[in-house]
Image (cartoon, rainbow, N blue to C red; front, top):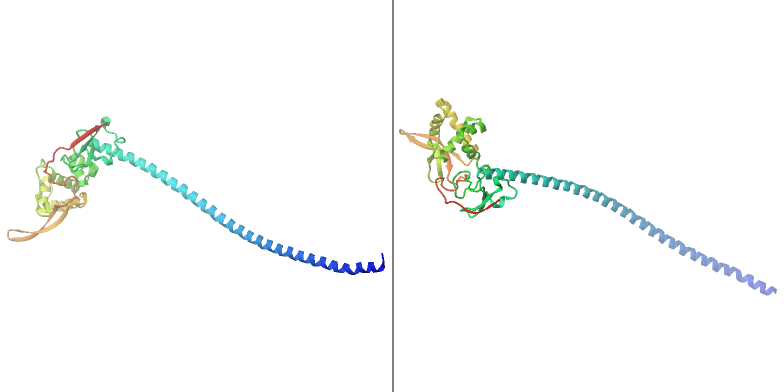
Length: 298
C-alpha cells in the first residue's frame, strides 16, 4: 500500500467513529425516553392496580354484607312464614270453635278447607246486608237475634260475653262483685226474660239510661244482705265496670232533677243512641227475616 492511500484511510476513520457515537447516543436517548415512558406507564398501571385492589376489597366487603343481610332476611322470611302458618292454624282453630258455637263468619275471611267442624259441613248464606257468610248448618247467631247479626263470640264486647254466661260461669270468670253486677245489669237490658230491669228508654241522643238511685235499689235486690251504704259504693264501682267492660261505649252524665220542690243532681249511666254495640245496629226488639242459604260444603 502506498503512503498516500494509508494516510487517506487514517484521516477518515475518526469521522466514522464520531458518526457511530452519535448514532449510539441517539439510540440510547431514544431507549431512555422509551424506558421513561414505560416507567410512567408502569406507574400508572400500578396505581390503577392499587385502585382496583381497593375497589375489589370494597366490593368483597359489600358482597359479604349483602350475603349476611340476605341470610338475615331469609331467616326473617322463614320465621314470618312459620308464624303466619301458626297464626293461620290458630285462626282456623278459633274459627272452627266459633262456627260450632253458632257464629256466622264472612265468607271472605274463612278458608273452608282449613276449618274443622263437626261432620266437616259448612253452609253458605246471604244475609240482609248483601254479604255472604259461612255457618254450621242450621246454627243460630251468637246473640240469637237473626237478621244481619254475624258475630263470633270473640267479636262481642267483654260485657256482652259476661252477660251471656250463667251465674256459675260468671263467678268463675270474674271474681269482683262490681264486674258481675255490671254483666247482670247489661243482661237485664237485653234479655226481657230477666224481669228486674232498671233501664229506662231515653230520647233524642240517648237510647237507654239507668239512674244511680235506681241502680242502688237494683243492686240491693240482686245481692241480699247489702247495706244501703255499701250499695252506694257499689253503684260507682258497677258503673266503672260497665264503662270498662263496654270499652266506654256507654257514658256517665249528670242531670238536674226536682223532687219535693228541691233540685238535686243525679248521675245517669247512659247508652248513647249512636253507640257502636256489636249486634245492636237496629232496635233490639226488631226481628228480621231468615237469611237465605246458599248451599252446604262438606
